[in-house]
Amino acid sequence: MDKQTFTEMLQSKFKMVRTEAGYTQDSMSQTIGLSKKTLVQIEKERILPNWTTCISLCALFRDSEVLTNSFGGDPLELAQVISRGHCIYPNYDGEAVYWEDLDRKNGFRLQYNKSNKIYRVLNDENRPVHASYIEREIRTYFMRQTDLQPV
Image (cartoon, rainbow, N blue to C red; front, side, top):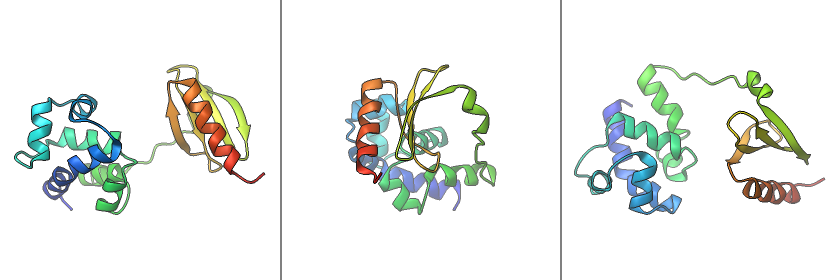
């Protein structure tokens, strides 16, 4: 797949991604960094999104089932391969100094980043599954995940 094909596929999925995420045109345009007018033009398939907009959509809505199903996997991984010719997977081993474990239960960990002040939950494979600036939100998510897991 080349950039042109990738961009055209994203253009055709823009509105579906927005509605899947429950965003209005106003909130989507602010999130992606576009004017509402430009977003409308993309959604009506009158203009193609530029490459930066495509990368923003893939990064910010990486968890979109619409994008995952359209591209057969992680849309950001594909964008990186198209753009760079290969994909680099970050090594997060050095980040441990920034994260403080707040709670552990059933293989899940609740952490707080001392530097950027976000909270996250990691699964039993040490992969982040949810993050938020709001402690109450992340604790609720953590409790729901760990209460569903067998002890």
